[in-house]
Length: 268
Image 1 (tube, rainbow, N blue to C red):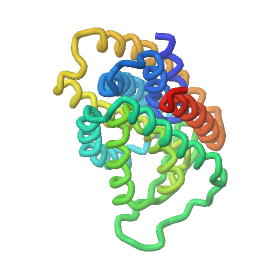
Image 2 (tube, rainbow, N blue to C red):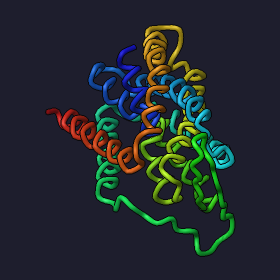
Image 3 (cartoon, helix red, strand yellow):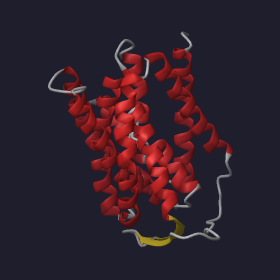
Image 4 (cartoon, one colour):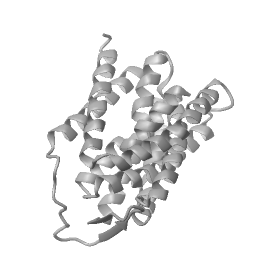
């Protein structure tokens, strides 16, 4: 429950669902467990955490529901495919893939310029212009290409279910840099999308019998019990932090976890 509280708070703070913290911890605690079982546990916790975080962000009025529902539709085929494919991935390869992915995203976030101008697509159909006004009276205006957002969500859905991380570690940075969402809106909207994304992957695992009424479900339940209040704490902290600080915190966490997993995959 304590682990769930920490995962829920930090995951909601950066809009990542917490899976990118939980899965590496589970990999270290259970070195002989199949990746399929660990990702199934993580996705259940991510789903509960994201649901709790979405309620908090919804009250802050920072969720772009119009864009979020389109992204949810995009995640469906990817999330289902990822949950199926993970059953065929060896444990050592799983650790290596996880380390490379986390490290790459973390280095990218630290290396890119912290301040970027909002750039409206020059041409192409499907340009969406959005304006969100939160509960504090802050107005966020931005635009992006809808087809690009849906396609990105499909890829994120696949990787998130494959690794059991929820996908926020990729979705938030991509929404902020490629789709030019304001970081606070990207974080809140990502939580909303993650709720459905994780639920899709979890449903596949339940249908496959990967997770059921046994020890794995009890573990997921205890982690989720801690993640619910943790998500509320993370959402409150996010309201007080600058967008750049949120991305830097996310990048630092990703690199640290990547180094530890890389050492483990190499047998160190």
